[in-house]
Length: 346
Image (cartoon, rainbow, N blue to C red; front, side):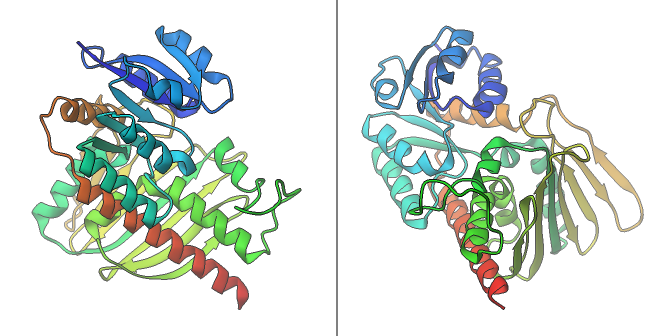
């Protein structure tokens, strides 16, 4: 019998990514319940699969048909919803990145899952993408030190991130009439939130290459929505650049790694599409180019296959790795926010 999946969240990621992925794995999963946060979108999504729908999380977590919970809500709700699912006795959880926005919450989430024996998978689709596995294998086999990494992201507008610059900061008045980019606290909060909501796609990959964050060299917001952050980790120079433009070039998501011997580039597909895996290309020191074309299965399918294996008890849960990834991302986001404030104060 396939596992019954309860989905918390009814946004574009659920509609365009997770529901189609689960439809391709009918032997493993069946969507039985979708809950929204009051938007009313769950009803229409549930109709696609014949699932039940509700608002909030209580009804979904009490549904006896739910075996696996997928948390696809905004990041600020992830930690509390994981803890609620564990308390409700859920045995397997897939949570979209990040699992928490503070180190304390990340510790609480992983501790709760570990002590309850709840399997937890973080939906970092780039980490599960077959192209990353190929690239990492090449780098490991070459034994050439990594010198620099550059992640470049250019995307069309995304409503959730545009809300970042129109909503108030935590604890402030309900609404700001317009973003004040001259306010260091506002600019720092935007950069921090974007790193934990957008940059986090690639931070587990970066931690694989350079696991110890040394220092942030610079960080600044990019108008209309974006950031540029430079930092050093294990003596590796890293630059993260992301920008969302109302109109411009087609979406670009490139992860470039410079080693002592060659250049490894990974081009990930645009967000919210199923278009196979990323493309990996190696430019060797002797001028040769090796290309690993996209495979039919992408990181979303791979991560749900891991969920199935964990639910079956066929794999071990990597609690320590998930927690280390969370701490790495939060430490970088905090340090970048501090660098933005200090840079604007000069």
